[in-house]
Image 1 (cartoon, rainbow, N blue to C red):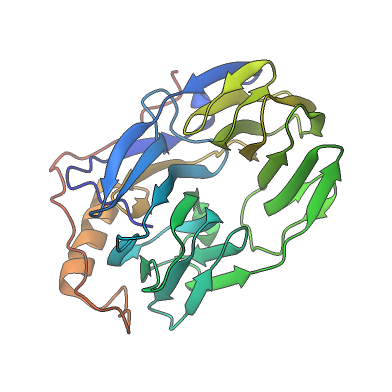
Image 2 (tube, rainbow, N blue to C red):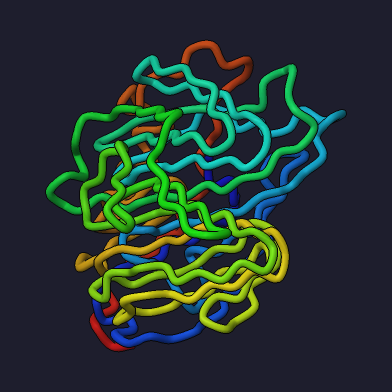
Length: 321
């Protein structure tokens, strides 16, 4: 999914100076962003108070939206570089096309993982004949410097490993949780898991104390380490945890996001992650004027033009919190 914000401002993210090295309970409220004509998303990352969680650099939650009489998701071809996109659905379907020739229909609890590497473009749309409801999350993972120019590629995994406990099913989206490892390719120590909790369930989820974590609420009401987390909000948990208590007030869906704190400082603007303002500016020019990002074939419509880039060179902010 694209960042369709026409007033997109560059931001510097990453660096261990912005990581909380101890357990905390920091509730993040979303910013509402219009995505096309019929879809509004709740943006949790980057957030005014929190830019990244491990290598997770961008989190949008959308739906459930009734799109029975609507076109649903319609995101024209647009570019990415320096990141991976993770498409995750609870309801509905999304048709993915990209400039490597990939064509896939992503369904609920299937992993759509696109590694942009040096450059890729893609489109996302609800099929013409689609389910009534659309509900999911779109997430980005920042690629470390050593891997950010890898060849672009797409992976679609319909079957993912699960960890179960009474009242809890955890589907491992990326990385490893409690010994279960996703088949999705990763480039940093990271974990992403979809958690389904039954009403009144109580569970203790094992964590890596070297990771920082956050929990995104997708549906229902659950208490995460004693904090009620409602749909469309996210609880940042910091580092230093070896387990996480969960309790469901109703049937609930959550996403656990975590990873080793991202060492490098990055510049993120629109749909690009780079290391300098100049690199971002060059990528924008290439999208508008060259063939660097390739062509998406089969989408019925034109490409998404890039917004204006503010002429302010960003510099690393250092390690002061």
